[in-house]
Structure formats: structure tokens, C-alpha cells
Length: 299
Image (tube, rainbow, N blue to C red; front, top):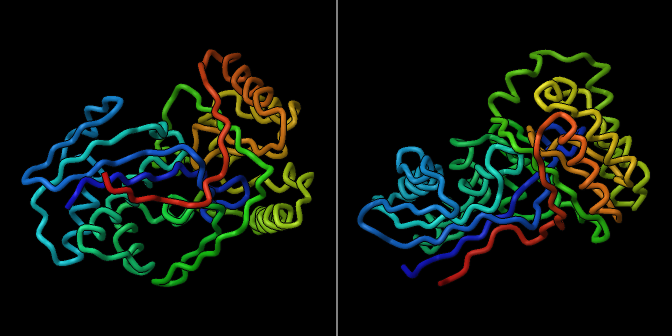
């Protein structure tokens, strides 16, 4: 097999009210350059020593599982991981490794995974289609799990909206972000989110962007997770004051995402300054929505 370059986009899940439901792909990418090998060799750029440990490398684990799923013996792999997506920040870095591992395994077998095959493997590592699907298929996706099946739909995303993503200088694991969530919620809070996620999709489809400010509010996860994000409310306030259409946590955090049509630098700078006020350094990225999803290129 010739060397493959697998390019997988970052994702931002939830988008406020769409908890474990909505996700978008962004034009920021992790890349995996893969070659057949008799042993496991891993290089990372920039260097992540933990990722270079074969027992801890998620891509290698998924590739091995995929080969076994397809009835092939896994001998090894040589992989270079180019890591552009911040790790443990709510931008789907783990989803890129899962998607790339599955695609590499199927490509070696000269097959494309069906949806059922993809989820059968992927859910062993991360049971969240709102992250996995945008990384694989691109665009804005809404998804749900019913029994053993996953159902999803790709929604056209307005080309005139970009994402301003603020990356604070601290990691936040998904496990920790989920540990603060309550086991039970009120009907009132559930209705609150159902109303807003419906409004979010309608606002995008009908280009009623003024509704996004309300539609990206949430009562199921952000009120609990914001205790883990210093100056959370001020970051949102600054984004809206500077022209953001709507703002939310990106995935489980620590990144935050603002959707906007203009004033991108002003929005990003305002959010960064809000973090700076509590002695947290941060940077912002202006990103477009990736509609293509993952790509496999022959080196």
C-alpha cells in the first residue's frame, strides 16, 4: 500500500442547545500520513510524547480494531500525525483519530465503510455521532441514536457565516466536563432546549440570523460546565457586544465558538481579553465550515 495522507477536520458539537445532537466541521485539520510497516512507528508534529506510545495512541488502537473487524491481521503501521487541532479543548481531536483509523483500515482492504460498519467500530471508542459524523462527512449534522441504529441528516450551512473559535490555554477532558452534569433534568429545562435547537435550525435554513442569539442558549449542560470555564459569562457577553450572532461552548470546552457574519477579529479579540482578565492566555481562530469532510490522498 502506498502512503496515505488522511485529512480530517475539527468539529464543534452541541452549538448551545443541541446537546449531543448537533455538530459542525471546521476548516482546521489533523493529518495522518500512513504506511504499511512490520512494527508500530509513530511520529507527531508538534511532538506529543504520549501520542507516540503505541499503547496510548488512539489512531493505532482504532486501526488495529478496524483490521480485526475486517478479518485482517494487524502487523504494524508507520504513521506521522500532524496535529493542528488543539487537544482536549472541545474541537474533536479524538474524533479525527477515530475517523482516520477507520478510513485507513478500510482503504487497505479496498473498501469504503458503510454507516453501520463505521458506527460499529467508532462507538467502541466514542459514542457521540455529533462529533464523529461532521469529522467524517463534513458540514452541519444533526444525529440521534435509536436502539442499535444511528440516524442523521446533513443541513446546508450558510456560506456567509464563519466561526470565531477562542482557544484558552487550559485543557478540559470530556470526562471531567460530563462529570459535572446532573443525572436528572426538569421538563421545563428539556422544553427550553427543544425550543431553541428547533429555532437554531430554522434560523439557519431561513437566514433569520437575529434568532441565533436566543437559539444558542442552553440549560442542559452549559450552566453546569461554566464553573469549569473562568469568566464564561463575560466571554459570551463580549462576543455578543462585538457583533456575534450567537455564542456557546465548543463541545465540552474549554474552547468557545461564536458564529458571525462580520467583525471576526473584533469578536475574537473581545473574547480573548475576557479570558485575559482572569489571567488565562488565549488565542482565536477564524474558521469556515468544512462541507467535504475527511479526505484520503495518495502520497
